[in-house]
Length: 284
Image (cartoon, rainbow, N blue to C red):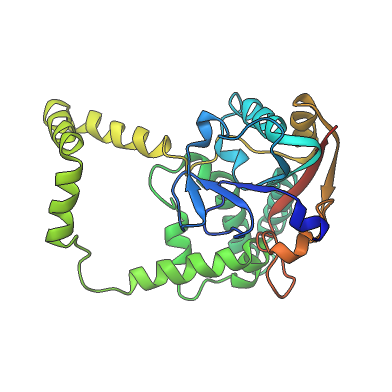
């Protein structure tokens, strides 16, 4: 049995990006290989269970005050010598690119107005949005997207997926309705929730009802609650007890055979989320 086969791996907030040989957790299970669990309630495993804990673009969805507890949970379930690998949007790189695009757009360098508009969205949209995908919907529904090469370099495969999804939705001329049997099935299974919503809507003023919908959306986990650069993420990991936090590339890791799992990289070796900061810490 190889070293990797003897190890236990945990992927938190995995979405559709998981490996079947790992324990995979997310708020909603996208597959039979994923266990549904609310990570705000801790990690449902005993102390010292895993050799590796990994999460990608999850930490920024925790508030600044909740993040230390989440990272300490990662520390708790790791064995001595275990590795935590964290991927988050790279705030430093976003800020530097914002300043570069601002300067070039201000000097009317051809093409850089669009790049500037993109970087403002990348910096702010997911922190302030009040509906799913926010202002990115309009951006990705452009045909063609004027600075597609720049956007793809920033977001990679996920940019293509989002563009195709939103442009296909825009091109659908038929009204999007819920099939009646499905609607009644939902009502039967969630009767009290449906009645409570109808009663609440009847009682509240329209502006108060709209404010409630915004609050509900912003509490569902899509928005970014905080952002990190290598300095602040190093501090967070050290405060939780991790030794020697280090920055890595998407394909580099202290985890044996990391690239074979294709979590931060595609089969062709390209980076899945090029806008990411990848860091690792070890539980001593």
